[in-house]
Image (cartoon, rainbow, N blue to C red; front, top):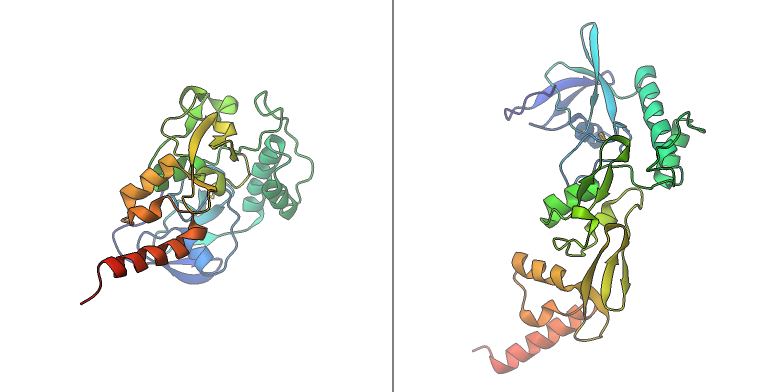
Length: 267
Ligand code: FES
């Protein structure tokens, strides 16, 4: 259930305080704006909300009835009474963290959250897939950033239930992957990584490698060929600056500008 998206502001109660949400604004967004802490793992401002981790659960009350909802997705109704922390919420978050900790006991972000909720030893055992302590918690951030921000949709899922994993199509070299590393940077559990070796960017977990480009000025590898091609599609940049690394770009820009001024002097 989700509140109005009709373009009107909504007034509701958050932890006993009357607050106002902008049209279409979620409870999580309002809470963050007001410095009310709600734990999250699968949320990031740069991509759409997905509701995978369930850590951001809050309780909505209507008279004597109440319901737990994910605050990253829930848009409040007028007169909702919402609590962001109470015994019921605490219990559910604790259970979620037990499951996450059983799956990925070495992930610092999860250990930290577990400490916050006094979870020490989870009651659950990892599945066959996660027995080797995977770092991936299927938060979907890599999938969303690749599709929504990079515009490539190179990453997806394989398997079902506890066997579900993040992967590229058929687990083979993903032609769609441009090696930009957005998935690596957004991953909250460091489940993905890349390494630049011998002129290639190797995305180990995605079984994919993408050729790198060396800076025309200093010779250092700084981006992939596909990344630069994508950049060209999106922004207008003088050709002379595309294959120059960010560090050398300033001096190169000045040189290009000087040359232009010399060859085409202002009248
Ligand atoms: S942050 Fe809302 S479900 Fe993960």
